[in-house]
Length: 83
Image (cartoon, rainbow, N blue to C red):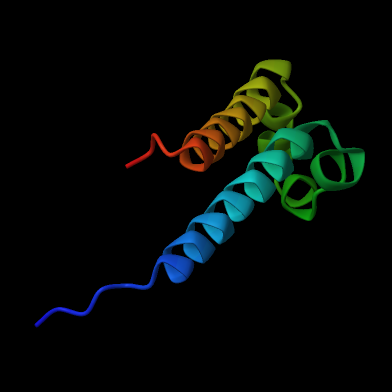
């Protein structure tokens, strides 16, 4: 006989999933425009060619767009249309 998952546990999981997606989405939206994270990134300092691409506004916009997409997924999960 399968056990039913308690409703409070399902809601807690949904809350944590939405919270995590919102956090990641906000971080990814903000990262390309942050001097500390994007312009002074050790990875970009070590690889100057990568730094040239990362400084491109289109690349920053694409990365920010991925963050907005993640925020949209969080919003959809929160209103219950995800599953």
